[in-house]
Length: 151
Ligand SMILES: Cc1cc2nc3c(=O)[nH]c(=O)nc-3n(C[C@H](O)[C@H](O)[C@H](O)COP(=O)(O)O)c2cc1C
Image (cartoon, rainbow, N blue to C red; front, side, top):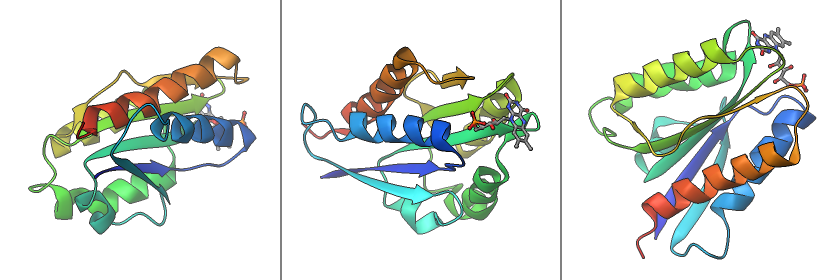
């Protein structure tokens, strides 16, 4: 059994909708052999990352950057995970209300520093969440689960 970890900062109904769609995609019956574990970004630990075969990161864009909560996650796990989690497949979704570019760039820079490898393009949602946005989040979760599925 493989394990997909979703580390998210869910700060509003909009970010909750995206999180739920990622989780639903990751747990689809179409993909077997993948256990999905979710952790709020302020609760996730290096042990959670060590136990994961893939990871999805979710954050709002705040003041041109990722949320403080997701940054805290990276601050917590960066050095403990630096040697042992290289090539970990990861995905990213970001919600903002005008410009999420800085948040995406920041996550990609830190994940790249860890040696994690993008398994899907980031899902960036600006403003009101649409059905297409939810589908993209579902696909993100399903793609990460399929990437690490043992079957
Ligand atoms: C302090 C603060 C800073 C924010 N900075 C940005 C930003 O730099 N870029 C952006 O696109 N949205 C920004 N936002 C909007 C949040 O990303 C947005 O509120 C969050 O994704 C939740 O979505 P909602 O407000 O539609 O519920 C900011 C919100 C707050 C409260």
